[in-house]
Length: 83
Image (cartoon, rainbow, N blue to C red; front, side, top):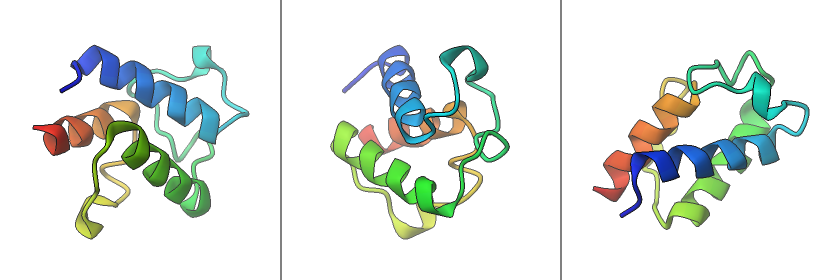
């Protein structure tokens, strides 16, 4: 199981990969990803990359705007899935 810090760092890297117009400096753990340009298409890409990277599977009801609003909320979800 990965630490919260490692999950956070890997999640940031994946988000930056999915949203290439965002710089690392613009992305804080509490930044609203939807206001930074996350839409339904790249959100699904994000979901797939996170599942692959962390070896987890999100349930249908996990995939919602609240869970994917920020790095913080994604990290909480991933940590729950790994636990």
